[in-house]
Length: 308
Image 1 (cartoon, helix red, strand yellow):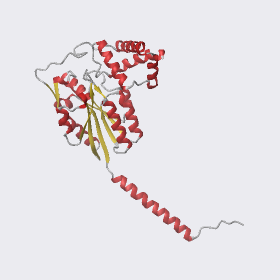
Image 2: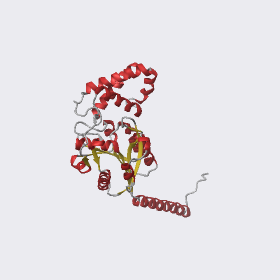
Image 3: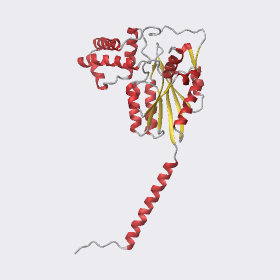
């Protein structure tokens, strides 16, 4: 005997009521999502902006020889984002720079007082090179994306070390847009970074000119590469192999084996150390030459991999 009984009118009514309640809840959720504004934030590597804009407008990256209207260029970035994301609200602009012992300079204090701007400081070493800035950008970008605080991230920089942060933010559902400043020759942003982002935008000389002014009576200091010929990719590749061989001899193959899992990327500290060592040997700055920096890393790995 079959114990199953056909559903009666009361059962169908209960089912219909349950479906109606579910549809009502879904309608409310969708309406709330539709009315919740998107949010974007800008992550600005100040070192990149100074170097790229300074070289484009004045021909040098020496920050002592020119002034940057940081307030003006930040406002220009905000206005551009407002145009590109018309239905989105700005969370804030993060301005990443270096300072001795992480103590704000007078200029950095003025920037920190701007509305909707947060200054985040890394260290400056003896060669006036930023330390720890990339890790700050990675931490903030990943954290905001993970907590769904932003839907779009504008990244203004060019370092290859930011690739992992871009991938993590995208994994949490955020779109990452890379903005850069026109390079006078080649590129000043790492190719792997260009490959990973969701969109790219480059600002030209006309955009940057109003915000960069040369200081009268101040000449560029003697930095590697000012006025000297740009080395070839083969020269830079050989230097990368030379530095790797020297380090392996000094530090041992266990050290080389320890960085192999990071291939094809170099840990940030090693990459910065390699850049400094190469510039000293070449007597030329590789800042703003992403192609040459890639050749340097290629030469480094070509020497490390066979021996480790």
